Amino acid sequence: MTTPVRIDLVADFVCPWCWLGWRNWLAAKKIANDIKTEVTWRPYELDPSLPEEGVPYRDYMKAKFSGENEERWKAMRTHLEAAGPGVGIDFRFDSIQHRPSTVNAHRVIRWARGQSAKKADAVAEGLFEAFFRDNRDIGDMDVLVGIAEAAGLDPVIVRDLLATDRDKAEVREEEAFFHQIGVTGVPTFIFEGQFAVPGAADPQVLANALREAASLPGRE
Image 1 (cartoon, rainbow, N blue to C red):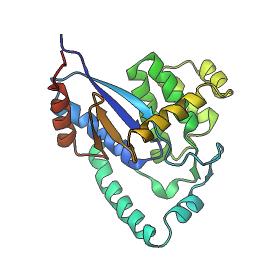
Image 2 (image 1 turned 135 degrees about the vertical axis):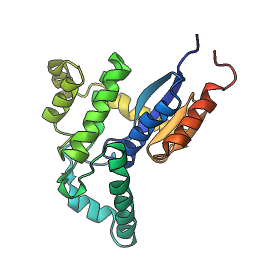
Image 3 (image 1 turned 180 degrees about the vertical axis):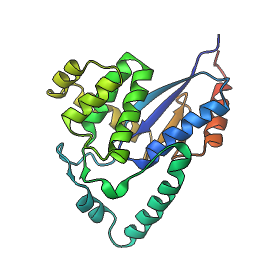
């Protein structure tokens, strides 16, 4: 029996390209639907220097994309808003008020990952929707507990864990590992630990990568 192709998906939940990349991946799996897969969400904070309470979004974006970078952001935003509806995404950038730290979101998906890939996928989708569509603060404990509960996790346990530093160091260590092996942007899809596809690649590109990974020597 052929084992599933292993994919490490390195992502952050305030990264619009990551949500687009995830939806493209779901489309890619339909193209290569004869191949079983096993996706593991891996943490990557676009800005680990943020305080855990987060900062005002507009001030943050103005500082980050000032001068020449402002035009670059406008171009990226135009592309994202055009591409989103085709994969069922409604980006609502104008309504975002808060730029959260995502370290706690990564802790929650780590706990979901420990239970099942299905629950981890549900948490990831919930985080993306909460931030980009519903414009909620995904650094807030109540928001995170609600997302976790909707994905099938025990809300009482999640709340208790979030009140501690449980697994915070482990998340940061995992992030450091992916930095060390050369991941400099997200999303990054790593196939069988052998090769990577960076960015929100088209579904066909991801499907081709999946077929290549499935044919790697040594796989059963």
